[in-house]
Image (tube, rainbow over all chains, first blue to last red; front, top):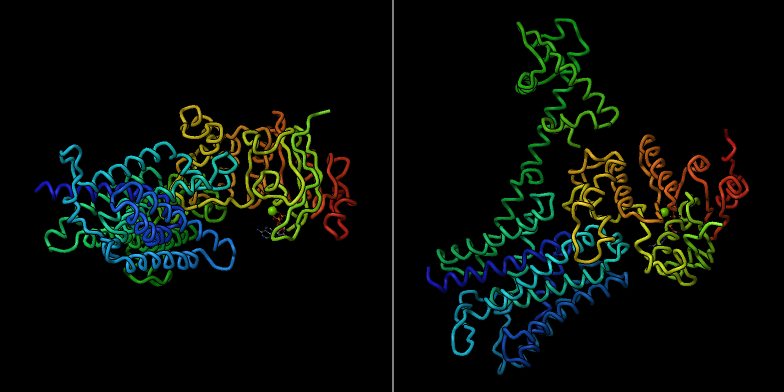
Length: 386
Length: 244
Ligand SMILES: Nc1ncnc2c1ncn2[C@@H]1O[C@H](COP(=O)(O)OP(=O)(O)OP(=O)(O)O)[C@@H](O)[C@H]1O
Ligand SMILES: [Mg+2]
């Protein structure tokens, strides 16, 4: 690997982490759309900042553009408060307006601005290593590495300091307010960080990848855990993985790096969406099937409990009387035998002691919905997991 | 004789310029277990939200032990009627209760062993210790209610506001909750509960406020919980108090 290759992957990974952190909270706050809005509406801020500083990596430009991001959020909220439109409509009103101001500004000044809309939206990671930062004549690395690195340090510091405040205000605004943690301050803090990250990263990776890096890893992580810290960690891992793997995909296919990373992000999300152990599509389908079988099992056990007569407990009778197809009857019998709930002797089925207890408990639960006694059954049976 | 915990003066609150609470004067003495009763839409939740500064009144003022609420936040705990929380948030029951301790920690400081112990004790008190690791959306409505009660308990406040804590809980839980509330009163705390079941008012509470847009009456249950006030509050001829 050449040093340029390493630098590109490093920049992409740092951006991924810097995006995953605010992204996790944006996803939890159901504000994914707002990051899209910010990423577009910062354009006029970037253009004006560029007129003033003539440097896409200048901190002043980043602050100016981030300010446009905040203005977007304020405008969206203002329009929403009028009660005339919903939030997504408000977002849809604000960001095209700001974005088009940016486009007009660029077009009007095309001669002296070294900036085009494509570059803002798509960025070009491949060129990032060529723009070096020199201090006193020595090369200390690519400029964008320093920019996104600084942003990451600020983001991580803020996360560590204000984790509890972010958590409580995201979970329960009312409580946060009554405990003295102003939800407004935290909200605008998060918006500021999201804006700064977007602006700082757009030059290297482009606005679209920034949005994808904020939302996709967090959304995938959300499907995998019920613990906020783990969700953050997973989002970061997914982000870094997509950044690095996406880079190599681009390398192999000779394609756009930002485009490949975005594609990998999409695939990661898709895989998680399908295969996540409890919230994934397949798990949900499996669980439904399993519950169906368990209901059948219970019906069957109850039948055994209520009938002592031998002919009622003959294996063949199950097919006729309970009216199940052979496959179904077999699945249920297997499940019951596996759990030592029944014994079969000469094709006559009998409940074991365990089976008997299980049936009483289960029926009791279904009638009373008191779930303290069945805690131990939850691990084995989906039916009792609510 | 006793101190005034909450004082409301000439409070008028409106939603979109339509007043829903008119000129309320109210003094809640320290150490009472008080019910707020009134029909749906009477403004009970609105009253509590205004006392807690969640809503801005168009006139009047509120004080908690003589000072504005913003200066006295630490003294007050609140269990809302419908938790405005995100049920799918990745967090456990224990974690939710732990959030109650954040107020006394202030900004930046994180909860430690002491806070965790308090949270576990509160869970134990409301009979939810077995569920401490459960994601909150996987709890039943009544269990969720108990978690929020536990969260209020760890806030270790002096004044508790609860907006219909018995909504959707079974009889056993209701008794468990009222016993906890009575314990709080015994410890000298002031507890204010929005309550709908008029039958149980005399048994549960020692103080009552009748509310329907205006304040109808407030005082000890034994003095003012009568058909006259009930009729004034609920409009129709109400006969409930003397059924036994
Ligand atoms: N956000 C709101 N915007 C406009 N009007 C509101 C709002 N919230 C409540 N109201 C109105 O204010 C009045 C008082 O509402 P409030 O929620 O305080 O009633 P409540 O006494 O708590 O009723 P309930 O017993 O149903 O909980 C009602 O007429 C209600 O329709
Ligand atoms: Mg109410």
